[in-house]
Amino acid sequence: MRSFIAKHGLKPRENGGTVQIIPTPNAQIIDLIKTGQLDGAWVPEPYVSRLVVEAGCRVLVDERDLWPNGDFVTAHIIVSTEYLEAHPDIVRAWINAHVMVTQWFRENPDEAKRVVNAEIGKLTGKPLPDEVLNAAWSRMRPTWNPLEASLVECANAAYNAGFLRAKPDLTGIYDLTLLHDNPVGSQQD
Image 1 (spheres, rainbow, N blue to C red):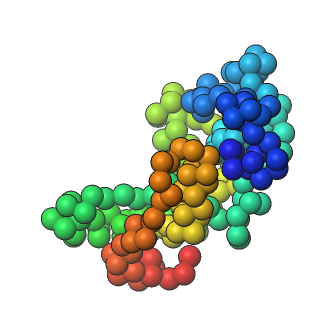
Image 2 (spheres, rainbow, N blue to C red):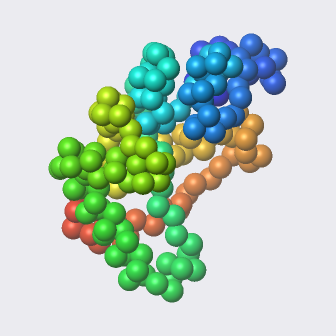
């Protein structure tokens, strides 16, 4: 969000601007918006869809529109070098399972939604309403591709916003050997 507002000539209040940015746990944002304590939010799914359905909000910026092909990194699989070197077979099996599950999710969206929502229900005590789940699902594209360019851009944005002391050098951050060993994972995603 800080990068987005900077590109549009705005600054956060702490830098002399007019935009107040309040880091807030996603789970609290809906209630804060409903009670008028927040005017907007930059959130991942399913919170975007929950804000639209449950709080009557509108999507002003779809982050997919800000990235080439609408793809950007939201999460990574991380393993320590020490663990990888000691247990490459376990890491390989985990990556292969990740690729297979991701492929299954993409090929079986209706069943995948049911599985995910059942787990959300177990974890939170309440599954998402179908309207929220369907809207959230329509905005996501699971992938095993780490989308390196978007990670680099996010890191540079964090540096430009003052969250990092040094400009990040992410050269060599990825070792995709085990991913490329997987017949499906080696395919362009």
